[in-house]
Length: 233
Length: 233
DNA sequence: CATAATTACTCTTGTATAAGAATTCATGTA
DNA sequence: TACATGAATTCTTATACAAGAGTAATTATG
Image (tube, rainbow over the protein chains, first blue to last red):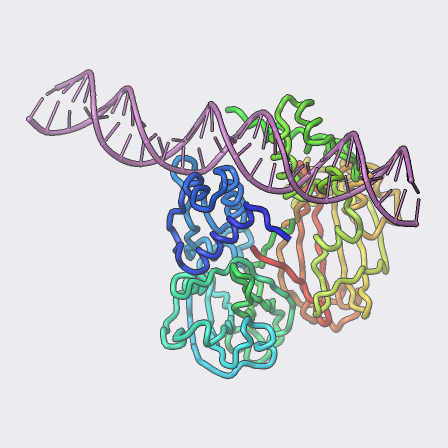
């Protein structure tokens, strides 16, 4: 079973990006150089780079070159924060409250997170949108994979950008389950809504470029002035 | 302002599929034939076909050929019906009740639907999942674009397959807004849940291959034993 | 002489073409 | 039935040329 050459090139570059050898913003070798280095033609290197561009891992511009995609707070929000105003516009949520602590993993977390960690770091955050609507998020990550993260509070607003910059862990996909649930008393107090209010509840598994489930996140929020928007293809 | 050749090829094939000249399941000309017919090389025809495959409009198999994607009830459900069991498995919903009627479009519908129709057809359906959970859907389409549809009840379970087969209208995208809302008394009666139960409310605009908004659909359902699942990239 | 505009050059990716390999499927034959 | 053969298809790789972007040299201009 032999991989095609262009796939070998893809895997090589993915590995270099995942390892941090090619950091965000770095310029990749040109098609010609890459082909010479890996012993394939320029056209084959080109095919690989095109596929990586489709995956969003690199960005290309005629005359300039190919660059590792820089995940800015804006682009990260655009991709992975689906809450929008009714007119479709987006706003950056503000951090209202944050607690970070290290604890033992639950059975479910050990099952689902990459490496079946014994200890996890739990990031509990309350975020607010401009008109006062609140979002409660609990993110759970492996303590060994993100060593020392629990001592670096306060954390940046967009965690995935931070994961990439500080740990070379690049989130490329998120699988989500959505439910509508009534607010319990704790929810009601946190989110400043009456108990029993219908909340949108999102359970997310975030997956990195090496196809590892890196984070489990549960979000709860009302949808009075905002909606979760998505495009199915 | 000149389109690249491969884009001309893409547009040509899209137009043939949208017009019904290439019906679902039809075999496309081979790369060589297509190239000869349109005056481009085999490689350029190939590039166009590859892009159409990525869009899901055609399916290709080495040694067999290229075929217009057949939208089966299964594939249509997989793409556009996001409700799944907690284990990720999918089941086909059963039709419990259906009413189809023709009426004047509301201002919002005229705004949003392609062609700003004066009259629309409203398809009101109640569907059930295996364990009894109910889903209420209201689909609204242009009466002129879907002439005679209101006299063809009962309609098939999967409308998008029917749209393609009977009207050559191919849905390729759906933009959705999700909210959590309490069940009103009408909801409660229809869905057999207590009034005030948290419901997931989905407003969908379905878009066809020519980028026209063809249908507006509003769904409401509880998420006790099922969840709306989605993968973000 | 200083400075701005132009030109030429080199590097990059984008587009187009072609040839051979791999796969599938039908058909003929033992 | 089993197997070989051949024709048709897509898949992989390679190569040539076009076009965009940046830089340095050159020229024009005050």
